[in-house]
Image (tube, rainbow, N blue to C red; front, side, top):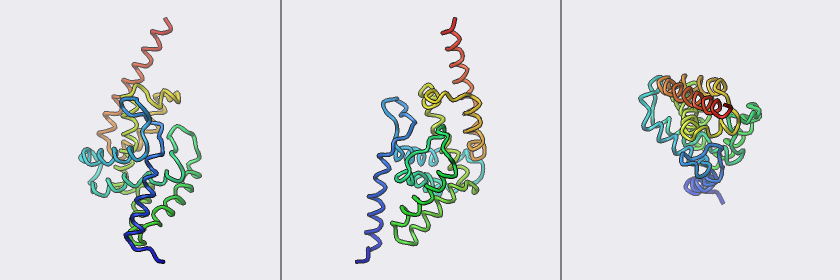
Length: 202
């Protein structure tokens, strides 16, 4: 029996409930536990809604929000690849592309193709909408690391130079004013860490 459009849409919605079970490395700001990928995606959508004026170019906020709600659904199949994991970017891209094809393939064809195209646009990061979306995807975990006293940076012994090189280009490209704030936060954070270590060794 052929599935109706509604049945396919409901299948997809049930499937993406699994995103709530994908645990990320970033903690919640209260440090009570790690956030999951569904929470991360929702939070990014709120960032896009509130911070769109800081985009480098003119963006369509609705499309940016759509990208951010979709960008991590592939983690249902492949899990989270933390920025500090050192995993192969080529292997990650291949696995995520297969996952995107499967997941968006659950939907009615036209709708699935439209969402897959949005996901691919985000991954390429070439349009103004995608540049801003990717900037926010870096900005949110940076904010979390700063305001939890180091978060994943401390766990992975990440240096000031590594933070600047890993986060800076993407955030600066899509939201340069946000990067200006980030530079201040990051510099203050690592200066405070160095000061604390200096006191400990006296």
